[in-house]
Image 1 (tube, rainbow over the protein chains, first blue to last red):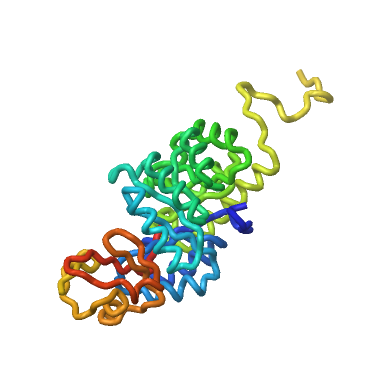
Image 2 (cartoon, rainbow over the protein chains, first blue to last red):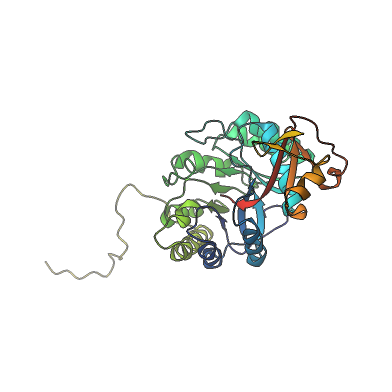
Length: 252
Length: 65
């Protein structure tokens, strides 16, 4: 489903901002996630330990290009990540604005085109814009990752109607809601709407108890997906009695 | 010579990228390298000669979202 990988869990988990490596490892395990995101940075303390932790997790590694503001930076970062992590996967982020962390769609498409041609399997962090989505698919992307709301904001699905349109517009492309999910209810909603997965980080990492929150999100994502598969009832403007009127006693 | 390593001006005796990695005691197998903004694959490090003022990035796996 996601290139050649069909995970059981539809929750992708970020690995940043946890209180400790031990909590991160436990949160990954509690989330049931099989796909986790990582980055490349100038070596700081704990680099070697982090590598061990990734290996022990047994997860598919999705390296990101977080913080890149140009196609060139993102392309170089992706190539470096491919060598270090030994994967063609890349979560392609090309940031257009430092405050909103909104993707730069022009540079994103340019970088996606070059990386897909170079054999990468690109997971582009994009907006709900349909034309940008089409250009990314034309560039060779076989997954799209529209934002729910700005990264780290916890606002959930800020443009729910537009995301519904996107789901309908790309019925055959796996769509992952990436960024802005703050609560399990929001993740469940995304899954009910038919998105294929959600990717989140801060909502778990910054929870009072990240391991318990990872479990909460796992349940929400599973429930939302199950509800989507079961078929949700349509919304009605008026009340419709659920108990039959037939056979009711005349007591007046 | 003087080069810029990860944003910091340093002096080095190394003449190639491989030697620089060794000199800085970095784990060659688990870092990725770039010179002046372009990726340098592992197999090219021996053949990448350093020059004055070169901008070098040596990156490692880190946490990310």
